[in-house]
Image 1 (tube, rainbow, N blue to C red):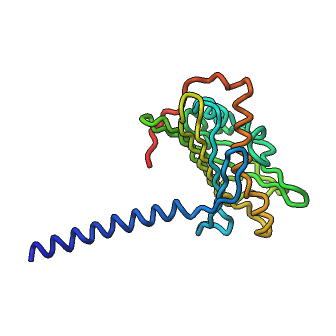
Image 2 (cartoon, helix red, strand yellow):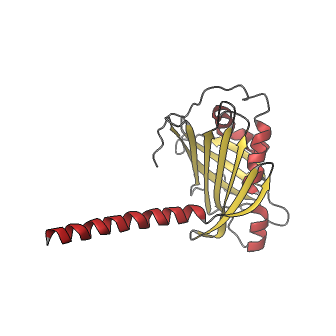
Image 3 (cartoon, rainbow, N blue to C red):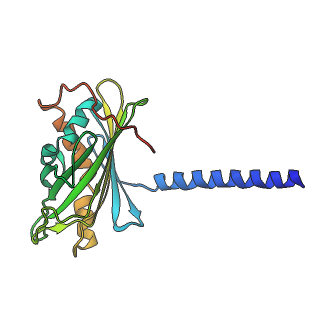
Length: 229
């Protein structure tokens, strides 16, 4: 009887492990390739969190992780490489304190007339896998009336994950993943048209930025917070 019970428990545990692995594998493989440019591949997938598709782009940038980290951490540079970004700046107030590996910022997205522009206030957290040298940035829009304007629609959902994976001394694999609901009464075809190349064009912008003088000679990664999956 004990042997039978032991067999049942083991069988159940194996089943749970297999199902967990299958679900994780499925969740990470339902991306649909939607384009490629200059070696940067773009993907989309539906999500239960929004009517808007989640997007992802993956590409190699010819620069070490430290250089790309420095560029992304400098919020003032966002309009120079991020697709459709009109304005961005660091926030450091008593309620939203930026420092070290936590950064708050404001971002304004310029959309074509007659569509209203969108904005978002974001809290980003930087972490690092020190063994593998991988740097992560996870950013989410937060609810606040900071800089809110009647002429601009505040995005109800904005989640960004940027992963920087070292690929040799002077190359980095950039994985840029975004789930952003622009809010308002926009038709789905327009949202898809504006967002489908967002990741590809943002990584393409980073490829250009790393060639500029301000950060191209940075050697050391400054993120210190350990990454926890």
